[in-house]
Structure formats: C-alpha cells, structure tokens
Image (cartoon, rainbow, N blue to C red):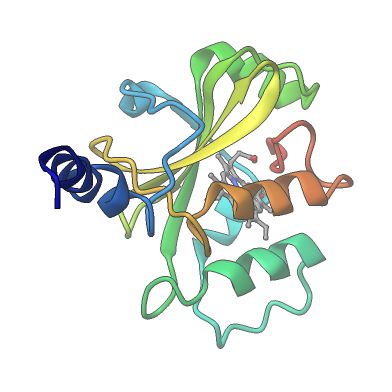
Length: 171
Ligand code: HEC
C-alpha cells in the first residue's frame, strides 16, 4: 500500500469512519444555561413520568401512546421522571403556542432519571432536535428512539398536537 493511501485510510479510521455508524449529531444546539430555565406544567408532567412498556396507556391521546411505545424500553422500568423546561426567551411563545420561537435552543424534555436532555430548537424558524447528556455530550443517534429523525416524525407528524415543534400545552 502506498504511503498516501495508508494515511488516508488511517485518517478515515480515526475520525469519520468510527463516528459514522451509530452517531449522527444534534441539529439543535446544547443550551449550556439549561439549569436556569423554568419548568412548566403540561399534560406529561402532570402524569409525572414515562412508564415502562407494560403500562396501560389506552386512555391517553394517540400521540402519548406512541411516545410511550417509542421510549418505554430505552431503560428497564421505563424512562422515568420527566420535566419540561422552556428557555426564558421562548416562554411567551410557549404559552401562546404561536409557533414563532426564534432560532436557537428553546425547549427541553428532561428525562431526569436518565439524566438526558431532549432538546428542541429552531433553525431558520423550523424545528430541529438533539439529544444530550446533562453536561452537554451529544448522544443523538443515527437511528432508533434517540435519532433526530424520530423526533421529527412525531413532532411534525401529529399536526393536531404539535405547533412548529412544540407538542405540549402549558397548564
Ligand atoms: C412519538 C411521539 C414523540 C417522539 C418520537 C418524540 N416526542 Fe417529544 N414530545 C412528545 C409529546 C406528546 C410531548 C408533549 C408532552 C407534554 O408535555 O404534554 C413532547 C414534548 C417534548 C418537548 C417539550 C416541549 C414540547 O414540545 O412540548 C421536547 C423538548 C421534546 N419533546 C423533544 C423531543 C426530542 C428531541 C425527540 C427525539 C429525540 C422527541 N421529542 C421525540 C412526543 C414525542
């Protein structure tokens, strides 16, 4: 093998090729000041937690049933306690559900037991998603429950519930 071919292959091994298969990267930025965001009461936070797969959720609206189905198996016993946090700048828009949040990170679904942040932001005024650990490590996957595409499918798919990326309603 020639020297340049070898170094090209090594470059690929050390960077891109290792990173590509499981990891996709977030489209929404990490909100470093998330600790300071206010939590809001919503339908989900009044339920309190995301249950495991044996829970009877047949009385909940279909989007909530689908959410449980998607996330009930990410951790034994279910994802657990949740909070919804909204950035100070986006709070007015969240309350109004007007779909007009500015670009940047705007909302968080905090999976407290898992210490994971589901982040919704906006880019060009369209919703974008990402999954982070509490200290900012990007763990957005390429496929499955932690993939940005999965967030989009649900958050954009349920037009009746979600307005430009926002699914919850402040109570
Ligand atoms: C199958 C549907 C579904 C999927 C998939 C889903 N969500 Fe949600 N999400 C919901 C519902 C329903 C709520 C509103 C819950 C409430 O507060 O009542 C919600 C709430 C949120 C919130 C709080 C703000 C809001 O919209 O009310 C954020 C942030 C969020 N999700 C981000 C994500 C991210 C990031 C992903 C992908 C990793 C994701 N969601 C995947 C259904 C889904």
